[in-house]
Length: 348
Image (cartoon, rainbow, N blue to C red; front, side, top):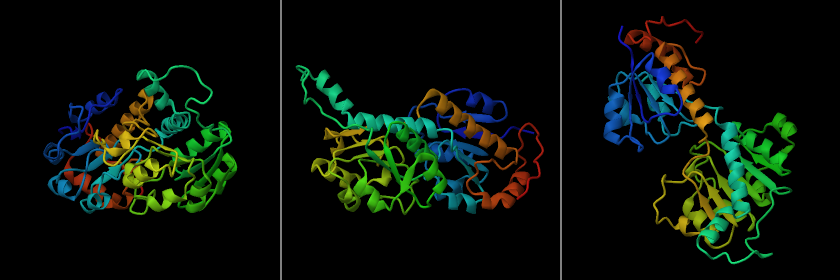
């Protein structure tokens, strides 16, 4: 029986691709930039499985061409790049890689908070430009994290890890989430607030919500107006959570003190984007999970999800589990099997 064909939209760190190549015929996009739309459509149309990144848009048009596709394995916690409804309609399983990046992303969130509060990037620019002349008691005065209030929007895995680290730094923590989490409140000594209360009271606001129709532009002119003039906004979640035009206005007019963004809308930002001309904003290239260990674990988990699915087993991190029964039948009929493995019976 021939091996299933899998398209991988970028080269991965670690040994994940070796693990995949043992059991599948793989095609890897070797360019540092994502495959273009035509290339992505063509490759996915020829494949039984695809390993995607957030930069790869899997939508109705593409899925219409991908008649042999059985599984989309997204190497990310979120999956807003995938039209899950369209995938389910075509009985294509979607998987993701939650959990493995929570600690690393939380560390980076704290790093951005320190960098913005203590004006690290401004200081580096001052030295490089030759403008730094001497030590002075009022040069680049910043803010302490210890004793400050951190407001976390979104209390999933990453939000929890940020709260834990913030408490260790002596910060007071409040949060807003769709569902209140009393157990976490006790464990991390934090309080639940309504969104408007959180924005009014927090010295730092950190975004960790998924991108949905409800959370898109959750930070806009109206919500920014609620924040303290000394507050700092941090976003390591998704760029469209923030209305960037509103953020530019708030930063340039001094309505808030600063922002640190690892995600933007769009990505990447154009070099002439007005945000990049402001001294009180830090922008990094979506690297919050970019440690060697974490990206390697993400790659391995994405591959494990693919191999499980192509053997007819339902991966733990399947997104659209409501299609399991017809999906298993579709896998059986496809003739795809990993090294001749039999599809195991699992409870629906």
